[in-house]
Length: 366
Length: 132
View (cartoon, rainbow over the protein chains, first blue to last red):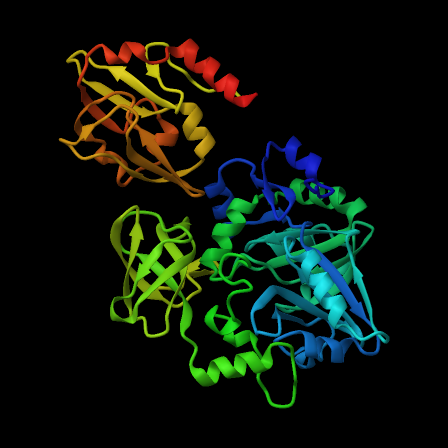
C-alpha cells in the first residue's frame, strides 16, 4: 500500500503529477520541472519531504551509542543545535543509509533518515542499541517541508513573530533550533539537499498544511522530487540507493570526508574500512561532465582507458549548467578524461570534482 | 487534460504524428500529448539523411530532464533529413510540437501506408483508452 504525507491532497489540488518514491506517493512536479529547479536556484522553492523519517534518540547513553553507531563522530557536536552528516554502516563497512543527526542538547539527538530505508534503519538501530539508558522514538507524527533558495530564509522570516525571527536569523548553516512557527512547535534546521541556503522545517503533521499554505502565500513555489533530484545532483550530493548502497563503502562513494577515523572510537564498520584503506580503495566516485551532446543517466558504462571501466550512478541534464552531468563510480586510477556509452556510442566526458553548482553558481570549468 | 490533435494529421498509438506534404514526402514528430507527458525536453537525436527505416523502427530519441524515450517511424521509408534545429533548441518540441518541433522528413516506401494510420478521432480514442 502506498503511503501519503499530510499534504497529499494539497499536492493533487495544486496539479502535481505524483510518483511512487520509497513506498510514498509523492509529487514529481507541479508544472515545469526546469522552472521549479530554476526557482530554487534564483528565488525560493519548497518541497514536501515528510516521507523522510525523523527519529529521536535520547537518554544518558545516547551520545555513546551514536558514537558507536555512526561513521561520523557525534562527539564533535558540542554546540546545541549543530548538525552532522553521516553514513550508517553495517559490520562490513557498507552503507545502510545516510542521515543527518542533530545535537539538540546533552543526551538529546534527532536523526533524519531516508524514506525507503527507514524501517530497515530502525530495525538495525534497535538491534544495536543498549537495553537501557536510551530511548529511540520514530517521529512519524512530524511533517517536514524544505524551503530552499536564496530568498528562502527571508520568506520564512516573514511568517515568524519577532522572537522566533531573531532565533532563525541567528541560526548558522548546519544548525537547528526549536521555535514557534504559526503557533506550532517547530524544529527549524538550516540544512537542505539543493546546494542553496534555506531551512528544513519540522512541525506536527496536523499543522503542516497551514505552514505549506502560508509559505505558498508568501511566494514560495512548490517543487517536486524531479527538481529535487537535479538540484542535489548539481550540488554533488549522493542519493542513497543510486550513488551508494549496501554494496559500497563510503570510501568508494565520495564520502571519506564523513568518516571520522580519529583513534580511540570503535564504530560499526570501522575495521572493514581500515582494511580497505590498507589494501587500497579500488574505486572512487567522481563527477562527470559530458563534452559531447546527449544526456547522462544512471547505469551507463564509463570507459576510463587503461584504468578500466566504471558506471554512472546518477545522471541528468543540468538545468543550471545547460550541460549533462553525472556521478560515476570508476577505477581509482581514472584520469581526467573518460568516455561514456550512451546507446552504443562512446561520448567524451571530463572527470570533475563535485559540486557542480553551489549557491546558483557553476563550480566547475565548462 | 486536453491536448491539441490537429485534424489534418495522421497518428500512431505510440504518439507520433505524420503530415503529408504536397511533394509526397512525410514530416514526422511527436504529439502535443506526448510532449506534455514527457515534460521539459532537453535533447533530441534524429535519424540521419539516407537511413532506411522499417515501419515501427526506433529511429529517434527525445530526452526530457527525467528520461529518454524512443520515437518510432510510423511507416517504412528513407530519411530525407532530421531537424537540425533541435540540436540547440530541443524545447521547440514542447512549445511547437506540430511545427518547429518536427523530428524528421521521410520519403515513404509506400505512398499509401499513411492511410493505415490513426486519424485524429482514432488517436483521441487511443489516448482515452490508455488513460483508463
